[in-house]
Length: 333
Image 1 (cartoon, rainbow, N blue to C red):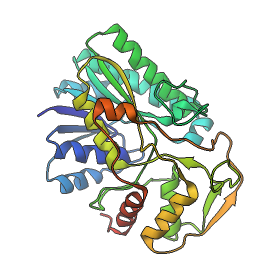
Image 2 (cartoon, one colour):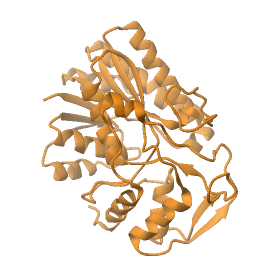
Image 3 (spheres, helix red, strand yellow):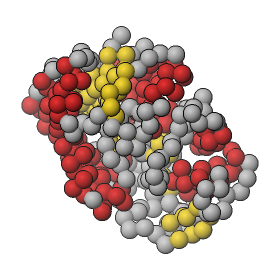
Image 4 (cartoon, rainbow, N blue to C red):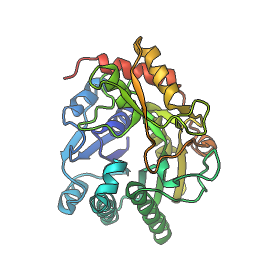
């Protein structure tokens, strides 16, 4: 059994990743500051898996806290998911994003160095590519993010690459997520943002539940089949499995990058209609003006992950939406 540190482990992606790791036999220690998560999720994870997980409440910006966690545990590797992730907020508060995401990662990596932990899997993002010149998007495309959130991901990726150059025994894997949606098949964990959602899927779910009067769709004049933006949506459980693949398949030290998506583009209207099919009712929507910084189409080439990680996304959009509906109908603790 290997012991892992999972930062941000009670969040949306972190909780699903923790479940998959525990069910695969890993021992997991979580640190999370609960800024966009809930301590009750720990109990839900343990209910799903029947296994215990250790949780330390704290912030990766607190170097004494991070060092204490490392001193009390002998970790084999780190999965680093902790970070602020709202694109719009990053534009308004760039320094907060650089401090939290970049400085927090520096503190984490220093603790890894001090305690001899030589492997990390990092939660990056497809937003590092910005507006791609062609499609699909390959890992060797230029990095040109259009907002501070994306810039923090690029900065951390570059830092990891430089660290691998300086320390030939160090292994770092950056996973560039496309658009995670969906929920665990149990219906017990899923995306449940504390404040205004950052992503399309929870807006659709909240509109279907009557929390919002209608869904705002930003633009119907994009150069796509139905005029709405196209993205690569990936089920969060497929994404969680991708983290294990990175841990288990990457044996060589150095820096490695992989896209994690389905390789298929789905429009806003297509996703909306798939959710309508899953929940059995129509969802009201209105077209509103485009947002600054949005792009028409974005989807991945995932051939590198398939070849080197032996990983492919398995769940389709209908399954993603059905899992979301199941989650919304399940009683909350």
